[in-house]
Length: 257
Image (cartoon, rainbow, N blue to C red; front, side):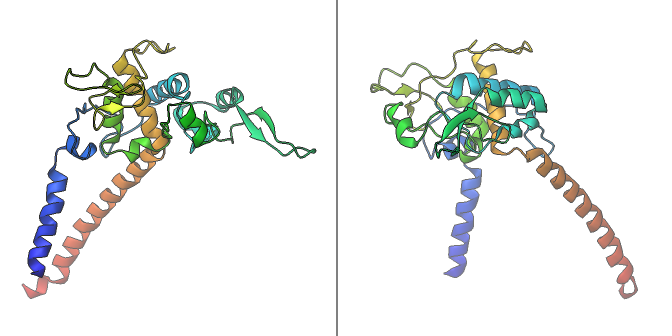
């Protein structure tokens, strides 16, 4: 009985690992995920800093009106290739609450590099009140919080389309072929040419979606490149150690053959 239970458990795990990624991402729902070619994929993956800066621009100009990135401080933008002066200038465009002052009052001041990037709403109730009762998720960890995160986010942003005639879309909802259940409360965020890049990169819907997905992946795992470098070095070291151990074993036990 014990062996049979273990075999069933192993079969279940193998079935989950072999299941189509679309089904895993949507909890069994029929969704359409586009498989992106990301520079950060694989053991030697890296972040494209130009794409990260463009994605941050998209976040500021398109996403920041509804979504926060509460776990990031302005100083973290140095990983995107911004220098200290640029980070200071970006921070100064925001205001944060500080205090109390000598009179015991809280006050607003320009943000500094050490400050967290402000959320567009003061609290969840204000966020719900401004979005027809829906709470826009924080985007700091969204790329890791969703199965097939980068592919899911990219597909979600380009997945808006007219609903089939057999599907009724309630007021305040939108049809998206990448969202589980296909009905989503978030309006289509990008249409193409929503931003103007200084480096001349494409501003198509797909291009903008790709750039902001790169940025959100970095936001969720800013030390990914360091982790992968350490991992590759560790595998290399262990490989050498295994080879040395093999020859040491042959030498130690040579007299017994």
